[in-house]
Structures are given as structure tokens and as C-alpha cells.
Length: 62
Figure 1 (cartoon, one colour):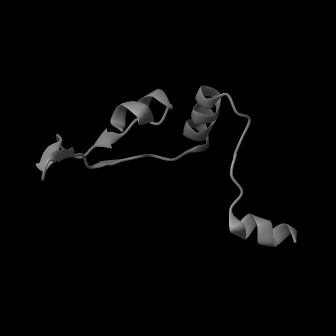
Figure 2 (cartoon, one colour):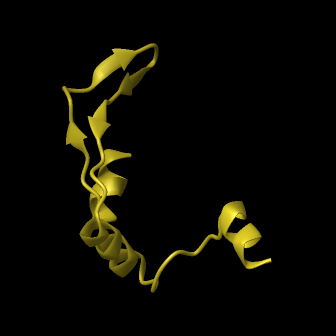
Figure 3 (cartoon, helix red, strand yellow):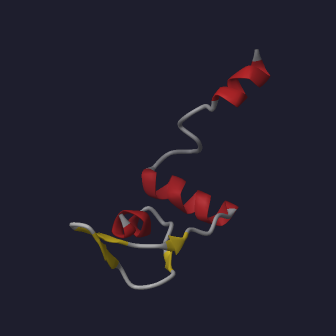
């Protein structure tokens, strides 16, 4: 997942190294949000903006 986020232009800031959790490895970290990060993700995905509409947005336009 960390690699996917980095390729999307949204790098994870790790809190610590991955830790074993059962039969998998767990990773804890921060994802910083900003208009710059959001724009980078849109460019990487080759979209101009949001692709989903929240139900709250739908209610505002009705």
C-alpha cells in the first residue's frame, strides 16, 4: 500500500518500521493533505478533479 500511495503522489510518513501482525506486516504512518498533494494525485491519475460525489454534495444541489 505504501508503494501505491507513493506512486499516486501521496507519500506516507512512517511512524515506525513495519511490524508483524498475525500473518502479515502492519505499517503505521501519516498521510499529509494539502491542495498540492491533491493536485499531484489528480495529475498521476490523469483526471481533472474528484471522480466521486459524496451524498452530502448531492443533497446540496437538490
